[in-house]
Structure formats: C-alpha cells, structure tokens
Picture 1 (spheres, helix red, strand yellow):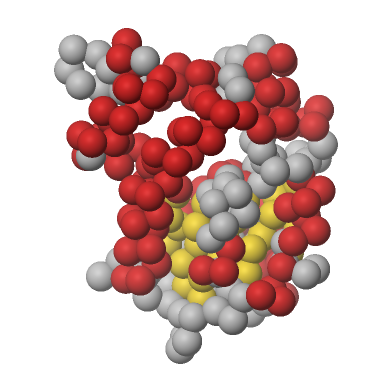
Picture 2 (cartoon, rainbow, N blue to C red):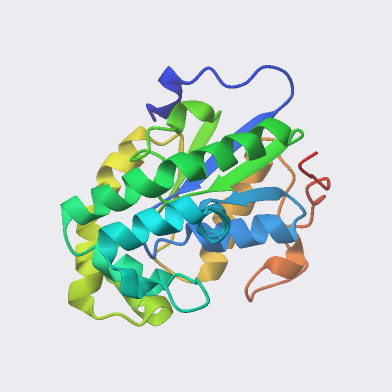
Length: 233
C-alpha cells in the first residue's frame, strides 16, 4: 500500500492509527472491539457531537446554513435531519464540513496530543479532511456496496436512494483502499472481520482482541493480552 509514504509519524513511543471506511463498511464495529480490549479509541462522530452541543457559534452556523427548524426549543440540534439535508447535494455537504471540521479538528488534535502510547481514531473522512499525515498507519475496512447499503439501512432507517447518495458523496472506496496501509475485508460475518483484525494486531506486535469480544465461534481462540489501559492525560 502507498499510504505511509507521506507520513513520518510522531516521535517517541506513541503510535497513532486511523480506522476508516465508507458508510456501512464496519470500521466502527472494529473500533468497538478495540475499546473492549481497553484501547483508547477517539470517535470523530462523538467529538463532532460534543462540539455541536458545547459550541453555540457552531449550532448557530448550522442553523443559518441548513434551517433554523433543526434547533428545538431546548437548543438541541436534530442531527439526523441535518445529515439528510447535508447529503442532499455536494455543495450542502461541503458547507457542513466547512462549518464542523475546524471545531472537530481542534478536539481531535488535542486528543492525539494527550494520548499515551497507542491510540486509534475512528473517522469516516480521514482522507477527505486531509488529516492522514497525523497518523502512523491508516486501516481501511472494505465491503461491497450491497453489504454496506444493507447495514446502513438497518442502522439509519433510510431508503436505498438516500443511502446511495451518501455513498456517492464520500471518497470512492477504491481510492481509500489504494491509499491505505492496511485493508480489512468485511463482506461476510462479523466473526470473519474479528479474526482478520486479531491476526493483523498479532502480526504488528500489538495487543490482540479479547476472546469475549468475538461474535460467535470459539471464545477460547485468539487469546492474548488486551491493550494496556490508555487515557488522555
């Protein structure tokens, strides 16, 4: 893979790994297993959600750009409806990213700066945001469009046409794969992704996934030390 050629990585013992992939690919499933292993995983969606909740200027900007009816009487933002409107056109999505990303990037950089040793970042738009140089490695979770659409429909409750628009607004999966350092296929059962991820961690000398996180199969397989407890300090 060509992904590491332009990234020198941070000095010292810290290791920063990005997890990315298109909607429905399974990157957040992998992130959840790493959390169960005790690893520090920064979630870009959660950082963005907190930014919206804690930054009045950001909420005001989103309301002005996408409709003041998105804000209820308690000042809460309807994030699902915002997503529908933002993915309706390429221009709308660009407006959303331009508004949210400066707040999210600051929080992400702070989290990376204060993380000890090993840290993973779960983010769909690593390449679109141009933050790939922040990481030592980028792992892409890949799946067929059919599998991704089925998973996203079950999670988001949207129709096929709306979900296909979301897929089309993201960087093509083939381009993410081309630029990745590691690729994990996730077209079959979740257990298969778990096994592939556990083997990759072992190959890289990283702490392996805890057997209890394995979805089905033999829980005694894949035994290995969990990640040492990590915190932001």
